[in-house]
Amino acid sequence: MVSLKYGKKAILLVEDSSIVRFSVRRLLEAEGYEVAEATSGEEALVKARRSLDPFDLLIVDIHLPGIDGLTTIRKIKEMPGYRYIPVMVLTVDAKASTVEEAVKSGAVEYLCKPFTSEQLLQRVDRLIGRGEKDSPSETLKKLLRKEINRARRGGTKFTLILAQRKAGGRGMAEIGRRLRRRLREIDEVVVLSDDLVALVLPLTDAAGSETVVKKFGQWIPEGGWCFGRAVYPEDGSGEEELLRRARELLQEQKPQLATGSGGTASEATAPEHPGIE
Image (cartoon, rainbow, N blue to C red; front, top):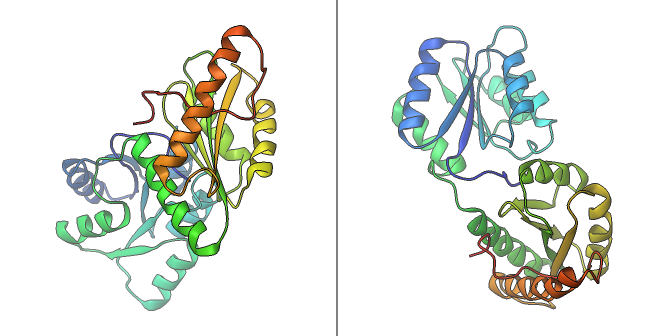
């Protein structure tokens, strides 16, 4: 699922050699990545669990003290939000059996020691792109384009829900994490601002999204929410059309919020809002 933070892409480097950690971190930070270090599998599990959002990439040495690298990868992959996070392993052993075990554990790339700066950076760039992340609004638009292409090929529907908190405040990252735990693995969550979050729900029609809206208030009872929904393809064939429809419905909800009528609306969309460009 989509990471909830933006700015620099974050990498968790799990390596017991201080020399390798220092050189890799220096290279990655120079390219604009944010790097967190762990010297053991146990420390990596703690940092992954405590991170506000999933790291964008895991770089893990196979041979670690205590919990080995492959076990570490498997355990992290079981954590919420990490199922589809790419993993690159570092190893001095390039045997086919070792690579096969790494792939079975969840790795998608490997790098044999010793390696050059170019080899490391090329692989990282191939896996997650350059260091700077997209803004939340651009992330949402890319997700919508991806879902539109998938739904068009498969002849299926999907729903965009914009949920806006009636009273702004902090803690939206935590709300995003709670939503991810409640939703399906295929669903996407993007926090757009301090009071606005977007849900992209594949294989979901209007009736299915109504169920999500009704449950939303049970999952996140604090603050009060209004909702704007757009269903592909009924409400639009492109990402801009879907966003516009959702914004229009959310804007219609504003007078109801001001007068106290309407309660929690199931049909609403986002107003012109700084979180959506």
